[in-house]
Image (cartoon, rainbow, N blue to C red; front, side):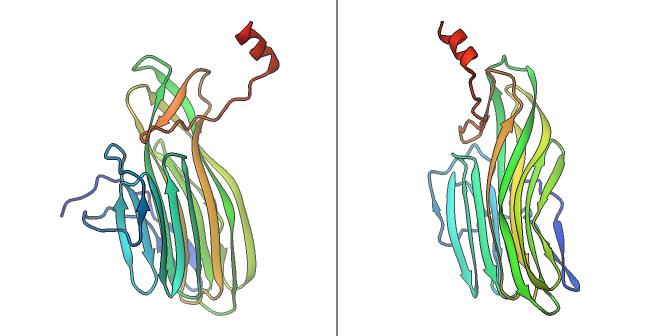
Length: 249
């Protein structure tokens, strides 16, 4: 079977009731198609993104080369996953009353412009997640897995919106994950951005929603980071009045 060149991060685990619920994107074979997918033009220069949806009938994991993706999965429970590589954004929302998994992983490549080829440039990869998780569950198998993960520079960090065990609970998430990275101009580096949701066999009245954006900060003035889709993911710098007078004098 042909393998897609994709190095998954270690599986993320959340304690759900009396057992472990494991949600992770994996290396997959070619040939899967995404149900109900809507996409902009495909881009063969970018690594494929990975989608995994499972309720009573598994769907995937499958890959897509879409720049823009938006699909709603319904199989007793419901999940909606999106990403827009032209904007550096992604989202996941889901609700379930039993066992359910939904993940979306965007695998990106980034380079820097504004310096000569071969120039090393240090920066910070950022992944901002805003959202919430909640449940109303009173038995065994309760709990919600809701996480955002950034993988870059040989390391990973997680935004934890998990709800362990039974109870009627709500948890907000507003976190910016960051990892240091070193560019060498002309030699793209890779980073991965993952949103995941899961519930166990209890999982009564569980739901979560998250919107995330990624960018590269900490670059020297005049240097920009460009994702493989051609998106400038460098934060807009606020100019001071003094700098504007100097620029336009």
